[in-house]
Image (cartoon, rainbow, N blue to C red; front, side, top):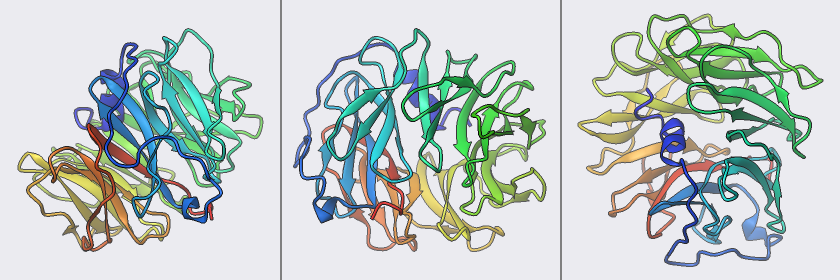
Amino acid sequence: MKEIVWRLALFTMSLGLIHAGCAPTGNAGRESGSTDPDLRGPRLAFTLLHGEGRDIYIVNRDGRHLTNLTRGHGKNIWPSWSSDGERLAYASNRDGNWEIYSMSLRDFAETKLTRTPEREGSPAWSPDGRRLAFVVGEEGHREIYLMRNDGQPRTRLTDLPGDKVAAAWSPDGEAIAFESNTAGRWEIYRVAVRPDGNGGDPVPLTHGPADSETPIWSPDGKKIAFESNRDGNWEIYVMAADGSDLIRLTRMAGADSNPTWSPDGRRLAFESIQQGKGEIYVVDVEGQGLRNLTNHPADDIGPQWSPDGKQIAFSSNREGSYQIHLMDPDGSHVMRLTQLQGESKWPYWSPSSFQ
């Protein structure tokens, strides 16, 4: 559902080189003292859109220690946590071309991992933290590559006609699911990742005639959730990791997208467009227990389940501009974490292993 899948929309609107500052309110700005117990996970990374600028922030789940990591140096998007929660990878155009960077959250030291004339984006850490998957190329002709966490060597994982995006590691690190329009429509594929960093032959997991997008592995690696319009409307589906045992989870009038698994693998939270605005729903893996958690006049989007299962982060414009909020998995105890000038969107939790 390309009109509302934020990763592709964000890539498109982030073209060009913009060096823009930001004017946050509150305690934003880079902070020291990363050994403070209050800074130990889980935390949230998110993207602040301010004018033409894009910056990556982190914040504690109690709203404390709000930190601007990128400080207006070009556009910075796609934050991805390392498995130990001590580094963030992201894409930036600060040097005139989109490249992949990595930053230590201990001392905020930044490393530029790619240095090519090509456009790189969408970094994703492997579960063991040793490698990164990322996308290379212009829209319509992107491929998925791998590299070590030091940026070397650079290995091409896919070599198919058309576009490839949304690379997602399996929990065991032995495969990557991605979406491609190789067949003339968006389908979900799986490719094995060998110990030497090379890939096997991509295997299609879905088979048209409609689009299937945004693969998300279950915590145990046995299932993949995704969104598809195969039944005439964008709905949430789940299938076995080999593409079998397809189950349709939602049957609503609005467009459903951006599923996120609960840590126990029993439920999914997702975004649904209802009457022109986003709502956050949950449903169990058998398609039962559908519930609207937000049920609010505002636009509520981008749900992300916390690694301990106690909260769901999301972005909402209920106070005017989009800000990061938390709520319990039943929709109660809504708390706003940010109050920044601009729009705070797309929260991502640090791993539960960071303690």
